[in-house]
Image (tube, rainbow over all chains, first blue to last red; front, side, top):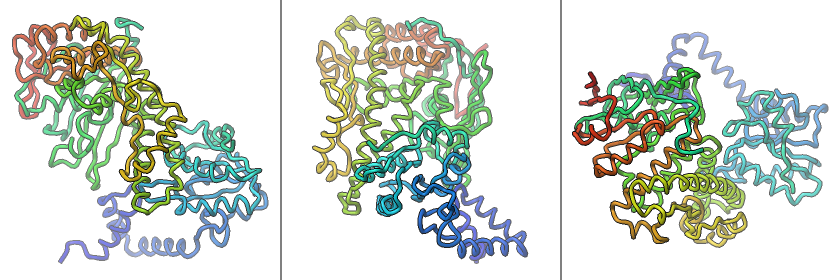
Length: 202
Length: 385
């Protein structure tokens, strides 16, 4: 008989799937659940199931949403002609914290990366360019991360939009430390980056 | 900026502590100013000490790419800790640790207790490592010469290291895409964007390497003249993308090279043009040193290159570099040893660590070490009075 029962092993392996959690930490988390067997597992599983049931992707921008569309896409107070393209949902939160952006978003959920088998199709770049046309977007601000994959993605989108008249394409640039991710930037840095965005449309 | 200009600060590595590194269980060592000689039979751990010091300077091992390899074979956690005395700015504690307690080995860098990026550590302790492998710099392949250049470049202030990383990452992604195109799993829509990224970072990398080579060339002739009468006719120049003409490809030329080679590159699954094919050309009377230089001339060229890199780091990093001579002096004749060491002494460097299998009389007479340590079975003892 194995030392660790299969149910506990299964929980451990589930925890190990989280970023930054290795085998030992996963085991510690699993055993912590057992210590508090009457309340914690119930709370945790209910919260997880609630998220799974309630949360989906916004039909318009891909951000997380409870329902058809997210808060931002359904807000009449936003400028629906200015679009900010980001890699991850947490980037939306970082840019919102700056208070400098009043347009709407498009979340790619990743960046072009042949190593990981992610191409334009997986990112839905066609959907993005179609949205730009259909929704009468006048400015696209590319806020992908300033690493090789993020820059290449920005370059690719800029080229895909180059043929569309009346769309200004800019790149979030100044102020972001090289090698950093948008989601970790502080509000001031992001504000400066938005102020210093550069044009990619010519 | 001439050779003997005083550096503004003098950074010394005063303390070195190793935990489960290579064959060392635990080692604590204080390293004074001047020349320290480390002797011991082969396989006792002399080289490991120098490797650890270089790892503090470069944040990675100059020897192996794999993290696991530098850990003691039965360990799950290993650490290199160095204390840098930066003079008026006080002490800096630098730690490179490898943690495999959670499965996959992970590297972490700490500066004064805070977790930091590699860029925050690199350049604090400029380091030049000289091993017997360097003796084939002239006769060996271009890869070894690129590595020599890049180790210098990486430690200089500015974007050099970052641009090198960007280029290698862009190239890696582009090569993966070429293979996906060959295997029919991608239509290559995004290839132009990756090609653009490669070219932009390639141009930056070539500019950095050009700058390093032209600065090395400035000091090279003078250093070489200490070893050979052919110094004036020996030249050092850059072959960007392997072009022996020395001609830099413009952006447009680069792009057309990439286009012209596309079908071949797709078939091979790798990019055949770019600074990953760079070379550092060494010539005597305009003929390749690789084929015309004698064994003695080749060694002289290597010594002059290393001395030039010491000057370059010293001129750009505010502190003389720490020099690591790994079992290499015995490969040189007494005359070369003497002239080489003469040019390396303070103020060119303020700390030199020399390893040798034994403290031969010749070595003691020429190197005049200030301190002498012996290593046995991964343990160090001092033989100073």
